[in-house]
Length: 187
Image 1 (cartoon, rainbow, N blue to C red):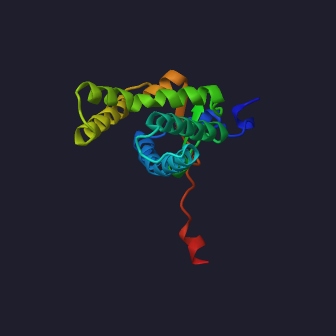
Image 2 (image 1 turned 180 degrees about the vertical axis):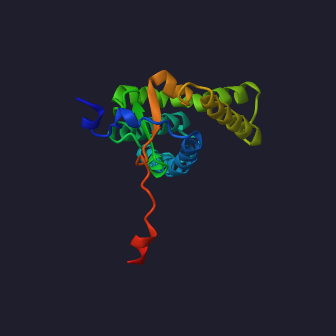
Image 3 (image 1 turned 135 degrees about the horizontal axis):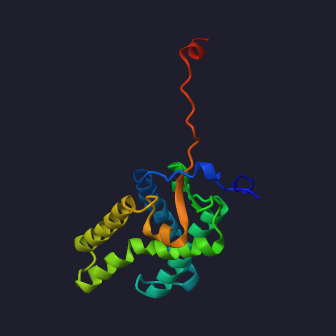
């Protein structure tokens, strides 16, 4: 069975890495979309637990949101290799052979993708930074470091992709269609 026979697979000859700028645009758009997912998860959690105060059950809420986000990403990465943001920016996540991800690989990728945030959050906590501008600067600095490090990796992949054996590939139709001729427009 070849990659072309597997639903959601990218033929091996078409495994071109997606440009970093498009992956970062997808990352930013994903953050906007996840705002709604997190709000819905918080609403469900507060309804199920009869939460009456924001700090009541805080750790339970955080664990629930972590689980919901994991389910969201694993589902989309296994089903089509793309979340809505990735579809918008023509980026797909596949394994090194171009196949759709297994649940185990997608879950590992989700857990390791927290490398984008955990080191910066650890530094902010160690430095005693309260929530505010300093924390956001640490997070932004961590994201920039991870994004720049992809520039120097072999296939321009992020750290968590290198560890998991996944790749973010360009899934635009290739080669691009030639522009319509002027004679076709005049008829």
